[in-house]
Amino acid sequence: MKLFAIGDLHLPGGDDKPMNVFGSHWDSHFERISQDWRARVGEEDTVLIPGDISWALQLRDAVPDLQLIGALPGRKVLTKGNHDYWWNSLTQVRAVLPAGMQVIQHSALDLGEAVVCGTRGWMIPTAETALAPEDQKIHDRELMRMEMALQEAAKLRAGRPLVVMMHYPPLYELERDTGFTRLFERYQVSTVVYGHLHGAGIRAGFNGVQQGVRYMLTSCDSLNFALAEVPLEN
Image 1 (spheres, rainbow, N blue to C red):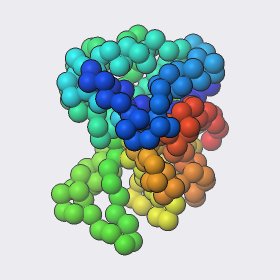
Image 2: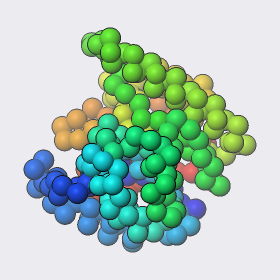
Image 3: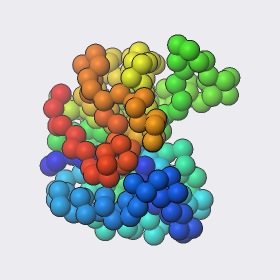
């Protein structure tokens, strides 16, 4: 099995929302992603999609987008992003998923050669900017949920690589010591894939190894609309 990741697909959700309003580099973006996907992913491989999957507001409008992804090769594992308003009841979401597609929500999943876990995440406080009280509350809740997911993953791991997927960045280039990073270090996470950052914000993201944990920004425009291969190593 090879493991790949790509986030922030931002499929139209029934409204035909064109992503190239954010720049011509978004022209035919999903067609470009699909071409790369078909060329590199086999049916035995897995692709992680860390959120912002569809602009749909209702689950029924997200179904065609999920089917488009489901028609591509390999196993797909999804988690929720901040724009996935259609993702409410986990039971209802699972009921409409195409074959070979799974979701995690502050939970863990055994991939065979690795274990993956995660949650959505939230904004993180920085040395310069504290979070507003309502955002701090959500941040703390997501931190607790992440630890729940890591605890579940630790029971499954059995010496294999542990991969975390989350939508929001758990750190920045200039802010590398956070509540999330400390959790990942404590649980000896192998790799963290995340998204959310676009445009000029991509430069704020961190790609590399910090305190033994590999971090990969995988929003699709940060990857030039090609999948990132995730190393399967501790």
